[in-house]
Image (cartoon, rainbow, N blue to C red):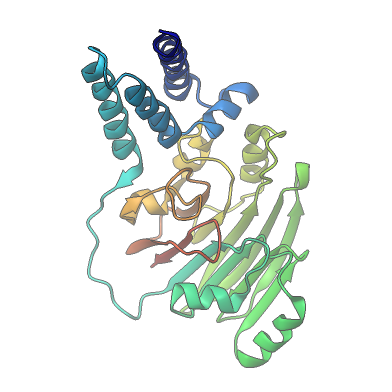
Length: 298
């Protein structure tokens, strides 16, 4: 009797919590700090887990089919929102490649080349800060004809061509942005590398708006970074109006890039100006970082 009552009340609490989480996810999202905290901590895969737990608690009750239906609907909605399917044209090996990766504070350019399985035209690493700096000299000597820069010990930049006009911008709440120019196959590109703080004490809205304010170009422009904000955020609307989201345009698979190969949150993004044609966007899962690598081919 006690066990039955415990299951009954636990199920009621889970059902109420599930309704609240779904309502916040669908309606409020990250409209304010507190709703954003819930929105980020309880993404759809976690909400789905709550629903499955409720189903397990009610597996022997007459309402089990209802709980199963709710779980299936949430699963289908997650797949609809997160699993991207695009027609991809045949890939030419001579396509230009741009790679972005969160290096997890300990991975080097060499690690990125290994994960990418190529030496791209441009590579940007964020959270580079704890990488062994001595090894950078060895890397530079090994790839002497290429160009490397590390900005404030946090953002690493590699290019096959000279890196010019580097402008670091230290934003609020320990976020960092770097603007630079480089050429890819003789064409000049404007790059913006962004590393927005992961600290949950800080509301993402002002940081996304601050970063957007510093983006001055809308042609031949590529914006990469760890925004620590999912694609569904209300505050990516300005980005969506002026730029294309590389993965939703030309990617295949789950849009989420975190955590540890499980599609939990889409924190990493590549945005490109609308004058550029993306051939393909590839997400590369790896155990070398808790973030997936993103590669675009132009």
